[in-house]
Image (cartoon, rainbow over all chains, first blue to last red; front, top):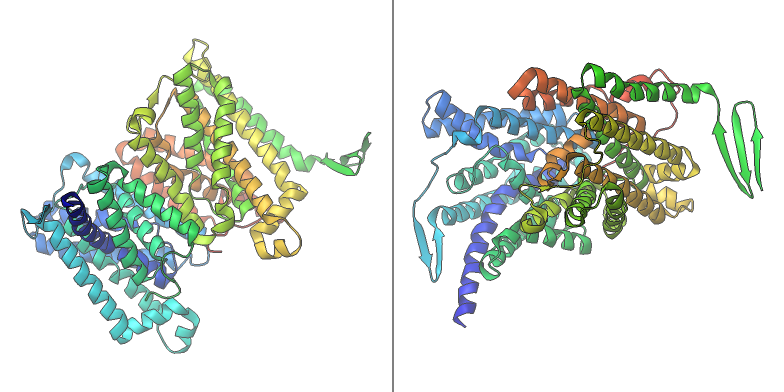
Length: 294
Length: 346
């Protein structure tokens, strides 16, 4: 009985924390899929730009952490605008070019980061909110992860409120359902597209800053996070926030079971991949209906 | 009884109720023969002038030999496969493991590499029926990543991080330069063989059925095409051909590491060969293969450490600047016969 409670505690707490962080990582991807109806294979570029962009300001210009983060966010916005105008919008009807172009963007960003700040550079962002660990029952968990989970829930709640309670949020939901009808009723689709491209950066940037002090930071990290984002978004149903929340915690719990029950952390990624493949084969549209973002 | 009839511009072969046409009109094969001759002479010239280029040519042939079946798979299934490197992994690991365990040479491992690739492709072939559009892209994208994870988890067997070593080489004459030359001709033979076979298939009635499926599955089904059969056959056959290139890699380098061929970056290179060459046009894949391989070599030689940045930037410019790829430049001045286009979203 004690063993069972021990396992349950670990699955619940780590399942929640990991799921919440996966949610931050994948919320942006899911929204891009839901609103823009594109498969953003260049999503991986956001992660290295977050860490290495801020590091560049700190190291090269000697800025403090906060101004560097502001500078990095501005760079992210400019990049998102360029990508939208140059690739997403231009090749909306030629998806093979769009997807390949987006993949190339992520590859170029990775190579640029690797050229200027290779792994030996030991890039480190001190974005720790609180040091140390917390013990809940038999579970020992780093404060940073736990706070990351809490931030993720608040962030997701704000996003949901935005989409459900504001006029702009309603317009975005309308676009996600039908672009042409949205245009007829006077919604400026173009402006909202750019707005969404920039809005989705926020959870990813916050998520990355939260995990940067405790997880591995290297130029190629974006691919791993992008894989997680794709898995979550597709498992949940492309572009559906409810599905994304459900899928994030499902994958978080799967990872927690692999680590703490089966004691095989090396099976974490494989288990999530297999889970997604099996669910997609049974239910190709994902866990939730994906005609709308909510 | 086989009946052969010689007409002005073609040979017509009839057997029972079947009929094959062999076109003799020079304008149809002159360019192909000229280019084949150039490719045949190239390694021999490089042998004396710049032996390093032989290796680049081998890479170009391999890229093209992966992209050509991928083009067939794309047209035959009406879907973009983003994970052809999975089959390179299956073919390569089969050859590598058998060669290391039993000391088998390339001729012994080849049938097994083909067999296991075909079996794995057959297992995943229902994907071309149940998944479409972006879901198909995703599932195919995930397959090599799953395989990569497996190579890491079962590192005792696959040596996921370091790779398998000690595979019997493809050719061993005792002279490294001659080995390279022979491997170049072998890679060229495989590439041209693929090109010839797949061109014949795409020009045949079967190719027309594939193009119909690529254009509109529902219409193809409506006019009586057994779309599932055609899709599965094109998927499995093309995967088998790609698997052979995995076998080639394993014996060519005498080592095989999943981390080289299974990540997204390798897949992206193959995708670019196909896209920059000519948007899944099989002759374009050859152009794309040579362009990508030689550009990479040129940049490595002249740019040094900044090459990894400049290389994808140049490829991106070509991707955006040439709507029909490099092959499209040539085709624009020619009779524009029907060629199937790529589809992702459907």
